[in-house]
Image 1 (cartoon, rainbow over the protein chains, first blue to last red):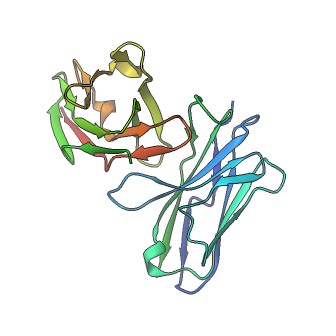
Image 2 (cartoon, one colour):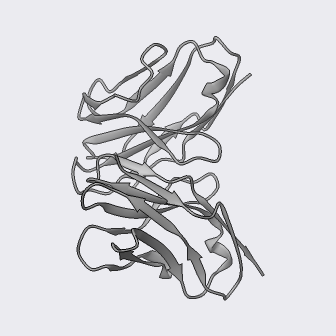
Length: 114
Length: 112
């Protein structure tokens, strides 16, 4: 069974440019999560989707970040415009459903903003 | 609010010796606790979980952790380290599986 797929794995952009990350969850998983992991820190939740609905986006900086999961399967996280402080690893995870279900993580996208 | 404190940012052991990674938690109600491992360039993997059943939890790869409510601790142990155990380990608290709160991580270094 394929795991959570993320692309690209690495991205280098100049500040003020837009960037997008893509995530394909494990087949059949209804819940999808985006996390931000700064260097030397643990991941922090940005947004959680149940199917196509964003049920927890309280930690998403909405002035520059946006996310979508239009058909309740794969998802895109966008930053526009990027700032130097956005350099981090962006992790996607999925779980079968919300509740007592294990989250499975993708390998992440490492973003460098210059 | 819930939080976890990982007491060591780095732990170094020799191959074949015991591993102890320390974690203290703070929670206003009965928590669920987890340990995740992160190998370089790989996704986070669940090692084990505590969800109010047995206080001694066994996980994958020979790891186990003991929930001690009186000490608000959930330390991760392994009797004998292997070179492949070298990775970053995260202690995590949650009020359910939905919202995981991660610690800052402990890097385990294993020398031959």
